[in-house]
Length: 621
Image 1 (spheres, rainbow, N blue to C red):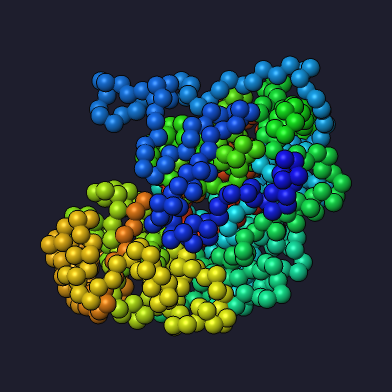
Image 2: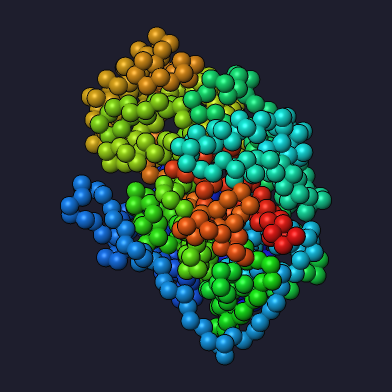
């Protein structure tokens, strides 16, 4: 068993886990086949016995998460829907009582890092290799944890070759605040934006041989196992910038293929080569914070392979970087009841094969008095759409009615679908799509480039491209039609007949006629979509793709924090010795995950991991 775990650790991913690209290969996040649902349900986790938060099994797409009586209560005298929370939520256990004689090993270091995802690894390298501090790191899974590869950093030197520098930090942060309902902490976002470029250069610099491809069109190299490729570069000729966009998208994203795990491991290796990492344990979650007086002074971790406890004393600080809580159904329902029924997806698995993102760091912090940030938290449920992505084609609901300005990012598309009858919509487009797609905004999930027939298999472009990488091509549409994910017909009437009982055909036909009328008039007086992205459905063949609820990748809600990664109690008094980074840090995003800067999730976690260590050093200078 141990040998298998070591093999998994080298890959950074537990056997049987799924990446976002795996899901896309199953037919798209928004339209999983039943086989895909069954496979993903096998990954739906409950926390292990050593976890700090009890997690019920993650909600499947076809069933609601149960609400236990101690999780929430509804007060009859209040208006319908008003939720009253108990003093102590059901998912939060009391801190474990662990006797000294049960501790099998003790280590004394400067900093303890809890979690080895991107925030944790950045903290370990910054502490050990840059600051010369001794470190112990504990991770719940088999190895360093990473998935996907998008990084949206501001003014990184490595992106200058793509013309992605020169961005105004104030403008970027201002837009992020707007998308968060101005509930986020401006200083946290400003600290990220001001440091993220240099941090990405530092992170990618761990791989001196890392190739940078010239454009999003470049074919994958035959002599490299990994590489960096720009997203949406060169920009489409027809795009004039963010000035008149309903939702701006800052073009600063690069992607490491096939994912960033090799870079994550390289950064971790640099830390270990410094000689300052005194302990690095996997399958060893932290189960208790040690607090002496008002200060957190260390942790107790449980070695799940050997069923023993380890104590790590931290002379300077403990950094919580254990990830989000969407794998903890009770916790997710407590803070985000509106996400009930939305399937979750996470690749990191604990020793029992259950998702590891169960809010351990948040619960550990609350056990020593830290305050969870106020809701609304920010679920990451950006819809990836159909074979045409989340592009701004006409959307009609089950009643056959248009219900939105379709020219919005995938997260906002998901928000609207969640409120529709049956929680689905149909995306309509026609045979003139090749002329229409180049007019669309370059943004995460949407198509803005067209590949001519045969190019995807020619070797002239990266053949791992999918709609999430901004490309539309006939082969992808044909595959979706063959799989039954997209319907095709020679007339609108025939198309609506194929959709059948899923839509009110008479109302849908009237809505299409109305949309065509607005498109020809050049003004969307119904929902205000830009005239340059309104195209009448009049060129056969006609297509319709059903968009259902998408998949939650993480839920961003953490402990009350500031730009220096401190955390605070309910009186906003500093909890000495405790720091937060990554998805354990609160006050970064609110309401929803912003795709204003695609790839910001990785980038913010990277910067916060480094900033947490720098704050420890500053606090002890």
